[in-house]
Length: 494
Image: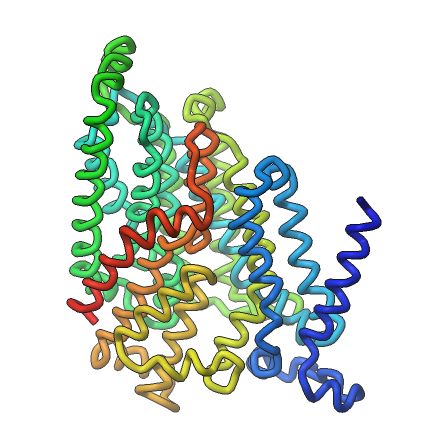
C-alpha cells in the first residue's frame, strides 16, 4: 500500500510539473520563472498570467473527493479525509514550489497568512463561543416553531455572522426535531437561510462583505440589500413552511405520541449567556481591524497589517475566555464536540492550497487564462451570476474582490481606489449590489460555498441525520429551490 501511494505521488509530481510549466519554460529552461518578488503585485499577478488552465486539476480533484468519496466509500473518507486533503495539497504545491520557487512560496504564504489563518481563527472563535450558549426548554419541532427559529437565525446572521448564528441555533433546532422522521429538509433550509442568505446586510455577516468594507465600502451601505434579502428569504421561508407542514402531517400521529410520552414541559431559557459578552468582543475585534490603520509588518515576504494581527489575537482570547468561564457540563449538554471545526480546518487547508491557481488566473483579469470569463462580465445580471456561480465552488471572499475590482476597472479606470469605490457606491449601485448579493446568496449552492455549510452538515451527521451527498445536495435541493428564486430575483433587481 505504501509503495502504491509513493508511486502515485511520484506520477502526480511529474505530471503536476508539466501542468505548471508555462510555454516559455519549454523553450528556454534558463528562464525558469525569475519572479524574485520585485513587489507583491508583480509576483502575484505574473503567476496568474503564466499558469496554464489545467494547473487547477488538484483543485478539481479535492472537490471531486469531497463530492464522491463520502458517497462511494464513507468509512474510508471518514477516517482518511485529512490524508486526502493533504494529498491534493502536496500534488499541487510541490511542483508549484519547484518550478516557480520564491514566487510560489509567496503565493502560498499569502493565501495562508492573509486568508486561511484569519478565516479559521474567526470560525474557531465563533464556533467556540456559540457552543457555550445553550437554548433549553420544551420546543416542539412543529412547522411554525421551525419557521420562527429559521427566521430568527436569518435575522441574526447579519449581526453575529453566518457562522455565529448557525452554530448558535443548529443544535437547538436539531433537538427540537429529534422526534421527527423527516428532518433533512430542515437542515438544508437552515443552510440556505441562516448560514448564507441571512448574512447579506452588514460586513459582519459574511467574509466577502467584510472585504468590501476593508476596501472602502461604508459599513451600512450593504443595508441596500434589504429588498433583495427580504424577497429571497420570504420566498424560501414560505416554501419551507409548506414543505415542513406536508412532512409533519404525514408523520403527525407518530410525532405527537412520542412527544406526549416525553411531556415534561420546561420553560424556554438561555444558559451560558455570559458568552454573549465574548460574542460581542468578536464583533468589536472585527470592526476594529476594519476601522483603524496601524501600519504593517512583513512575514515570509507578505505584508500583514498590525491591526489584523491584533484582531486575530483578540479573537483567540475571546475563545479561550469562553472555554475558561463556561462549564464543561454545559458544552456536553449542548452536544458540543470539536470535530466539525476540525473537519472544516483540515479540508479548507487543502482547498485554500489548491485554489491558488484558479484565483490567480481570475485576478489576472482579461490577460489571464480565465480572461474570457472576466471579459464577458459587463451587465449587472452577469456580475450577479458569475460572481455567485464561482462563489459556489471557490472561496467567495476573493471571488467577490476579483469582480469588485473588475467593476472598478470597468467604470473608473486609473482612479485611486478610495475615490473609485465612493463613485461605485453612488453611481453604479446596482453593480455593487449584484456582486455582493451573488457572493453571499450563492454560497448556499454547495456544501463548500461557505464554511458554515460544512459545519452544519457535520453537526447534523453527528446527530444521526443522513445528509445528502455533495451532488445530492445540489440536485435535490439547491438547483430545485434556489435557482428559480435567483432567476426571479435577477429579473426584478438586476
